[in-house]
Image 1 (tube, each protein chain N blue to C red):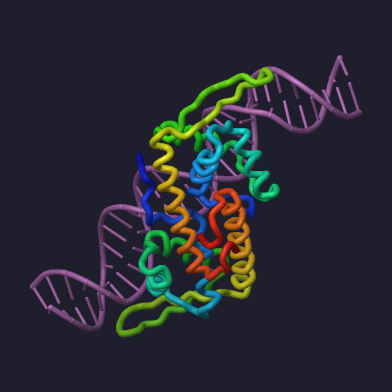
Image 2 (cartoon, protein in one colour):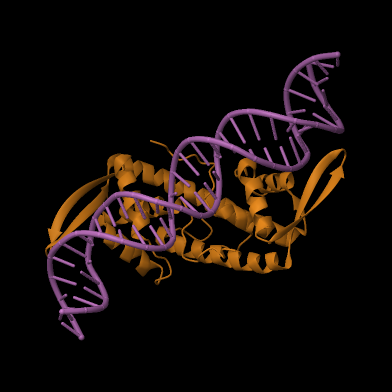
Length: 114
Length: 114
DNA sequence: AAGTATACCTAAGATTTGGAGGTATATAAA
DNA sequence: TTTATATACCTCCAAATCTTAGGTATACTT
């Protein structure tokens, strides 16, 4: 019965998105990531915090990210950035996702970028 | 530690692939689906049976597919085809996945179809 | 006789995600 | 002044989907 909520992520894509964003931006904090994704997708994609923070913590635990906490305007920000391993892994995982997406398109026979 | 196996599916994409294949083909049986996907992707994508059969059963339970069993060369084949609801739902879910993929590309900033 | 291809299936465990809930500060509105 | 909104972090539970591993059985090839 579930028409499958249009907002839901494909499981596995979130951590790759995080890695990809951090490739471009040096360092970002959690809330910033949610806003950036919302911006990039014109509000169509929402990263929920219940998914984001566990994902960030796992990437950190796996040694791909390091953190640095700052207090800005009285509020705590926890900045994440790629480690050396993180850079390498990011490249690999992004390539892997790209390959998967290509194959997925072959099966779905969707027009390029659609 | 897990470099995330390159063969793994993005969770949620399998059922849409099944629906998409059945839009084109009228009816297919499980084993045929695994081979078709392998064919379309030059062997790069493998649908495991442990994922496929539960997915088929769920689609059937949700009323999107009906089955028809035939015995061919002494072996049982269970053919699946889209119900009327299945056709409608297929269109919706494919469009939804396409929209998600577009947004994902916006975040990943990948070249079209790559 | 044994292995491979065909053809179906299930069960256990891991992973990921969404939703709901919680805490706290700053600022704007009522 | 109180309330709502935006910023900013977090955790727990339940649901869903997948991988791995196992099972059964027939047909064909070696």
